[in-house]
Length: 241
Image 1 (tube, rainbow, N blue to C red):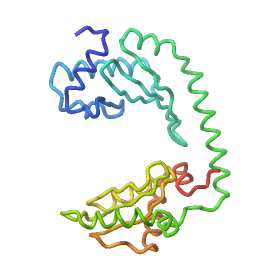
Image 2: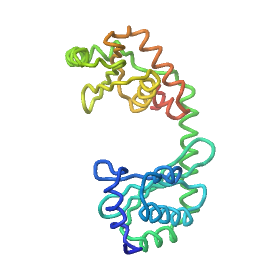
Image 3: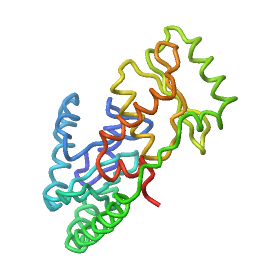
Image 4: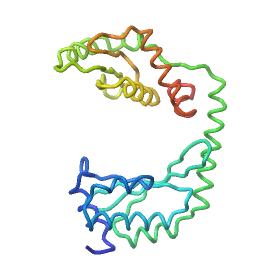
């Protein structure tokens, strides 16, 4: 394998269990665990490649790698140790040489300063959001807007065999009604929280085919947002203008 050719390394990765939809992703945080199932010498080659990137990037940055057939996309994250993590990039490379050059020439102090400035803007937004009351849309009102399609989706889920333990019905302006099923209530609450941060509407929940009353859905939504960080919670509660 040409040591400078990322595309050949990528194609070997795409033939492993790490591949999904024609891509393979790895994180600087837990890549050794991700590579555990790979055989040598591929595991060693990938680990060496990631270690080389790690050595070229300041320690207060993390990175994610997304491999496709032609190369790798690298997304950087600056962890300020306080408010959160701020993204940089992504950058794309097809050879180690071009990637080494890009990382060596990167203005890390400027990138860090830009991320800190971004943090300060978030602090200002959070401060303003703290003064606003939660504005989470009522599931009962949201369900009424999707009433025809929602009834059909509920009926369809109730006919499934085996019947899912939990089913979450989500209203999306760009998609319509999305349904996700779960075997665990905690997973349901986690996805509910995630969807609320992107301003999706929570329409209904079935438990073993039985619909939760709307007051129970509202309590679950409150439980969901309480598990979020400050920025995500402000998004979920629609306290950002």
